[in-house]
Length: 114
Length: 109
Image 1: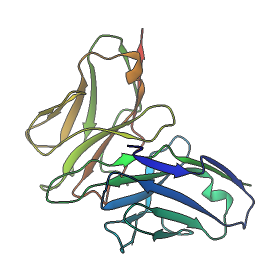
Image 2: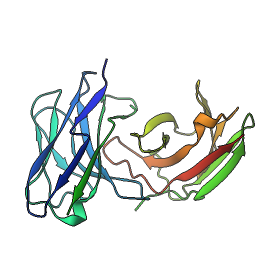
Image 3: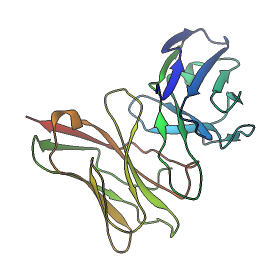
């Protein structure tokens, strides 16, 4: 099992450019998440998808869009990148049900916007 | 804002127990306490969670006070590989995990 994979690992964009961050999981999890982590800070939730076909805003959704392509894949799009979006982006997945389930994280995408 | 308060940093000697405290005085009855850690710049890794009883797994123990307003994560025999940032999170569901700044634990030889 690869777990949660993210592409690309690194990216440099100019202000105003667009790009899509890809995330895939092979654990058959229903829920998927996108977080950002700024230097020296904790993670903040951007968007999540509780199940295939649904997406919801998290704590910091402005400037981002997401697509839950299928159960495995959840992408994050920056339509017009800004320097304030320079960050490390983590994708995560988890199971859902009546219990409590841990989130599994990918290795991250390091994005710099100049 | 995160619902927890943690010390920004702690040191621990290799082989000794590391006790990481967390205050969560506003925790609600249906909210769990989760602990994750982040080694260097990797993605966070789940450690343990609990509601009101103490919990133990192969990685750590979680002690929650009777009033649930604070908890302690215990790494019984810390190794150099346990050097990481440790996050204490209080949440009622998987979709509202607020990671604060965490505690940077340094295990020293």
